[in-house]
Length: 533
Ligand SMILES: *Cc1c(COP(=O)(O)O)cnc(C)c1O
Image 1 (cartoon, rainbow, N blue to C red):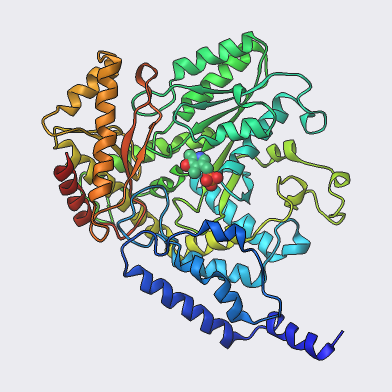
Image 2: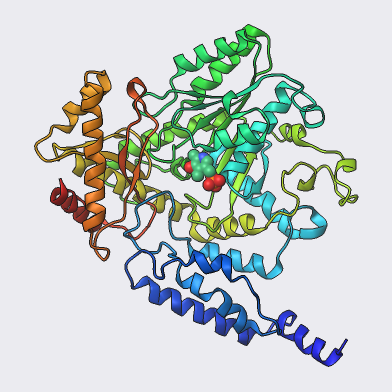
């Protein structure tokens, strides 16, 4: 080996040169700031063709600027969602406290598999998990948990605990021909099916309980489904209650579900299923738990008082859940991936535990603490704990309350403005979240009357299809004619989850996740609806 050449190369890529690195960082920041002055969207069109056809890499060692150049077009071609006109989905711009946490994490690059590979970063994970647990479960005694790569995986941890509860030893012996089922609501995230498929239950053994018009699981139908399954000898491993559905922010009645699953399990003499709260989106409203409505230090408007009161009531439901999913990369405006899976009682993690024989790389692992002995992942990024603690402490409780209350306020304002238009119908008037789903019909139609008939089953299938087609057509018309510099980006959902008489309800959708979105953007949105209807 030519050592001179080797040493020069190692210096370039393994010695930290703060000047070189900060220069490149400043260049990236400058590009990002330039981008922020542009309307939202695609700054460079995609070029998938050569992404596949041209995978060659440089031959000679380069430098950090080559690294920059290798990714720059893709960086420039990606929207960071900083524009306040982005209202499409549960995605917001990442907050900069999170960025500081993320940078700190990337500089050390801990692996959260065990203490040996992460030292104090594992301690930070325990702290971040406990802070989140206290927020959602109210100072619970014995919470524990881990950060995973997403809400899907966090929910999968809960489902797996449920499988082990109702079919002990499944980790070793598999399902042994038993039918094992899971239950979610009809408005739940589609990841329930992913999980049932991947855990070997089979997607056909995931049962969806229809929701009522407030997008909440129908408890009468849950009870009936449990009777049906238990009478057939099916083992019900988990019930996932959604705390804030992705489209419309429906919240399942966790206290009611808890009562029913206990009652039915006792009646049939079986193990109670894992009750998991999928609060991937909804958890953030827990910041308002202890907001003093009388003192009202944030000077919230009177319209907000009943909303905050309702939020505080709903959050109490989380206390009865066995476990919860929190996506900090959604409502926390944090960086991906930072999803937390938290059990209310630490002892429940024993259902996931593997022995040291099963994890030969970690003979030093300590079963009281080292996550690798129970996690699905082996190597695990530290981004979750770093971005979460930096964001929680940087922004502070009052800051979080401002962020959450503002989202709720903007959603409420839009709902009220839409209600004033006869040809519009808000489909989630009673939910307390950041999202609004609604119909726009052509001017002259009475949207409320049409919806009532639709709900009552009084429309013929042709009539239904005509009206639902109009909702879609007007959305497309707005998309075609919108001014990217002024008009908010919305999304269209083909099914909000509520299905009167088995018919999916499509809707226009706006989600207030961007802290800079304001009333003027809503006014312009209403104007644009008046223009296309
Ligand atoms: C987004 C979402 C998920 C999936 O989370 P990922 O982090 O995208 O994997 C699960 N449940 C709900 C309610 C969600 O909104």
